Length: 466
Image (cartoon, rainbow, N blue to C red; front, side):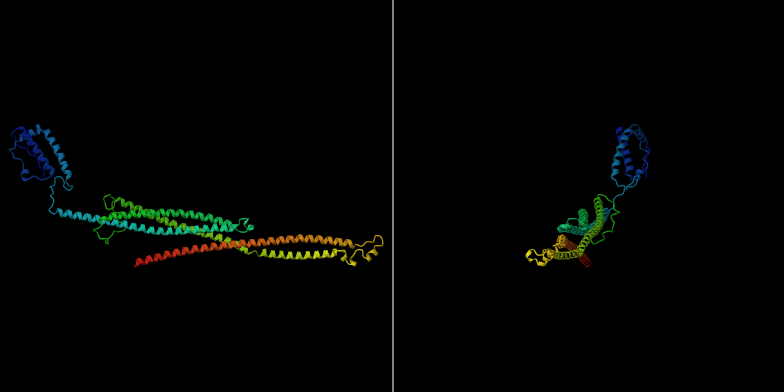
């Protein structure tokens, strides 16, 4: 019920100053009663007595209205300050609510509920941080495995580059006639070197990115564990084996500096999720790069080996060269026999070297010839025929000797070519054996590394099941 002012009877009591103070006190009391909202007592709610001088109120309203307004403004300021300190539950005009006797117990229960709810929320956040740290650690393990594959692939490339260098050096030491010109095998060796160098640079770049990503994942794991340790400071009174929340439990939480899910925790979770995604993409790129590098490496290796094998087969097919040399040697032998026959025939035609060794029937001045030449212009052609036959035999001997020298030179050339081809084939065969041996060792090392990884995975799986 609202307090209302009532008119009073006119009258004058005491001095004017007392009247003014009385009016101000009445106005202030009425204002405070309306402000506090407390009901007046039964006596106050009754109309004022008729004997109260009404003229006192009229004079107060006409003479000292300025003082009353100043007092009311001062009282309104005080009332506003007091209203700010009150709770929002108290409305204007309603009776004042006094604290109940169980206020202490209620405050204690509310505080305990608030602390428990906060601890449960913190436990969900801490569990989310721990799970994310576990995912980061698992990703680190997988990325380290891919880094091991990269390092083994780089070792294989360095080995192949060393084999390529030794192969080129060995082919440069072939005999001079064979080493004067570069063949297809030398071109393939240069192409293999270029291919292996490009693959090595690509794998080194990917390995550098992998190491950088591992450092980022390690830093993310440390930040996650640090945040989880900081959040776990208020979890001493909660059971560790209780419910740790579901995945994504922090999605519905508000991010506030003083809440259970702080902006720092949100930033750490988001950065770790981004790092895990980048690591997964990097692992996929590593697998693709390794697959492409292995196929290109094997293709280059097989191309060079096929070329060397073809060179060895060509060197093994020098039977025609050997047959030609054998035929040349037979021709040399025939020509030597022919020369011997020509020399023997010329010697028989020319006769003995000494005249004393010539028989009487072989002499040009034998008695039969002397008797025949007694007639004029009677000459025998014996001497001319002997001279012409000796000259023809000399010419044939000179020609046969030249042919024999040419045949002997060709035979020596064929022999040198045969030795050079066989030496080059031996060099190529040695290079091919070395390359195959290094390739077998590389395959065995990769197989053993995969076997060790599989056995380690089986061991870890058995220990986990136990």
